[in-house]
Length: 284
Image (tube, rainbow, N blue to C red):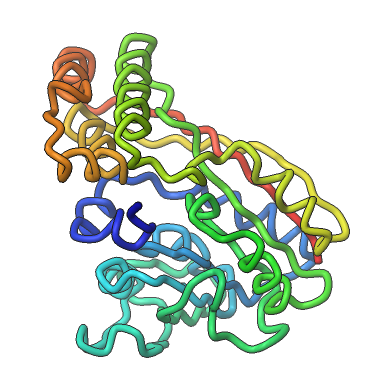
């Protein structure tokens, strides 16, 4: 069974180019809930830095914790940091670079090797800990105590995921759902789908840990744009797609060819996409 690092290795740049970025208003919600201004933020399972980058000009310090070397390399570039790729696990920190325009607060970014289960960070170092599109890959029994350890009293943990697919139009959405269902069925049938791949029980898991004094879930809306190529690139960025292709499953068999055909017809040029983000929050 591939773990999360292996499942998302080898295509970090393509992943970064296709995936959506969490909405900037998420930072306002989390700062309000935590009662902080210019917080110290830790983003666990940070991937290519898409979630960490939204804190530019808002947080005092942002530490992106990511186990995958390829993902860290892209995150360094996205966050305007410099570092020898051969030493990708070491911490690099400096003010936000030109790819991350500051909005007011001078934000310092760092990218470190680590995981949600073992961040390597000191106790009580964060006002806010985030996990974007990542909590379903955690060993929650180990990760949530680690997250609570690095949170300051009154700090907030937020695990958020966007609903797949984006809302475009009924035909495009239906084609993507059919593709996604087929990928799930093929993965399951071949014993390749991790049993922890679902996201529907995050709030229950956070609440059941007993580590947070109050938990809740809210939804935010994000608007982006995309064309047929980006929709297919998003499909290709899913770990299940890559896993099946490596196992010899054809694009026809997983429904990717059909998705390409529909997208070419419905998205010949960029149109608005609407993403729903589900945000599960717990206060320490």
